[in-house]
Length: 124
Image 1 (tube, rainbow, N blue to C red):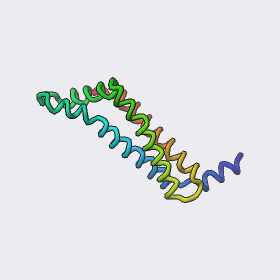
Image 2: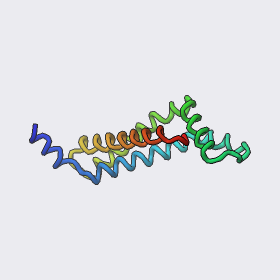
Image 3: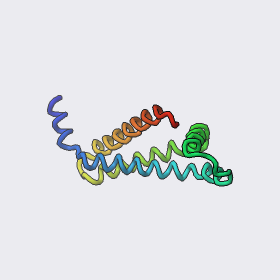
């Protein structure tokens, strides 16, 4: 088992994994914002009396309750993860599956940590 771990450490590229995870995260954010355009269009017609916290709370409520937002964000978010994994594999050009997989896992862990911190933030 030790030699397998050693081989994996040799084959993995931290730079490629981080680049893939960042690409996944950025692309997922862009996709989510594009999917959320109906919310932004709807709030443009309302008076701009909402504070920043109220706006963010409404946005979170919209994104959690909108079935179309969820239905579109899951497959497109998955494609962003696949792209991040592809980028990691392409950058290192060795152990493609390992580097792509680790980029996806890193991105998912990053999103999980963000979710934990956002759920403990009293503003949301």
